[in-house]
Image 1 (cartoon, helix red, strand yellow):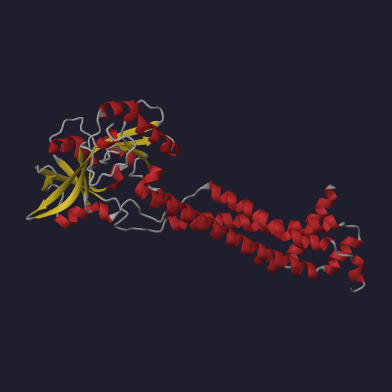
Image 2: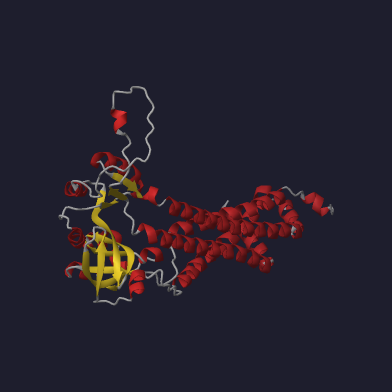
Length: 421
């Protein structure tokens, strides 16, 4: 048995080297397919992560807030004077409620004690006007806990000038959105005037510039500490309009949002609901990448199939001699499958190496854009899954490409070939 395996291997090598150019072409087809498969998926996965992180890094897994909505049950519906009657009410006004989350301190403490929660960051959102001479520019100030914002939302990565700690250490300070700063021609260390929605006019010192990568946000959004926004509005230290939550398992966000909605009697929105379009876009881009990569491998498989088919036609005499000297159809089958798998393994291994190298080269190419301050090179994802899929699929493709021609070769009758039929 061992002798037969060695002999089959030697015959396979002889047939491979007899048509070395065609063998190299077939191996190059597999190498090229695997290289492009790895590079394409690595680049597209990196791009998906980059695009999603622009939003998802700055988005809580669950957000608690108060939504100003009309009361679902109007006073007339509570009346017993008209039982079974239909009520038609026009111009319904929202409930007389504040944006403040009631008992925010107790809610935050309860969330911090929840084992499924990774972190909590309170926030107060204040619509304001930036006062630029006689002109007022609309804007929004977010009062944040600087340390929590850095830890949970990598806030410091988006501050392109200045330091986030200055926001905490400097009283009445602000980190301006880069778009708003450019419109107002403001430099670091300068003071600006803002007017809050309640009419309060307040001076703030600029200690940094923030750039999210989304221009429309950077034109209006700025950041101060929670204490500063509470001072602007004349509210107590417990005044919070948003509670941002990061959980340990993001897949649990929808279920936990429903639970918190009932438990704390506030509106709760999860990240999947808030950013469904981004998740859909990522899935479609990934699907296209896999489809293109697998198509390349299938095309390479057809190339191997054609080359083996031609080899069988050209080696009819050799096959007849093998079968006449005692080789069975299974042995002939094994010879051509060995040839196909050898091409697949060698071409696949080179493709994996070249794919890794090409991905590394792309990952070093500078990619500088004003809208993405944290990105310096093209994004690449070196996920081992891509290499495993490429290796397995190349073996399967080349095996099938060798199986069908070998099956044909194993059925050849040596007597018909010798007779010239």
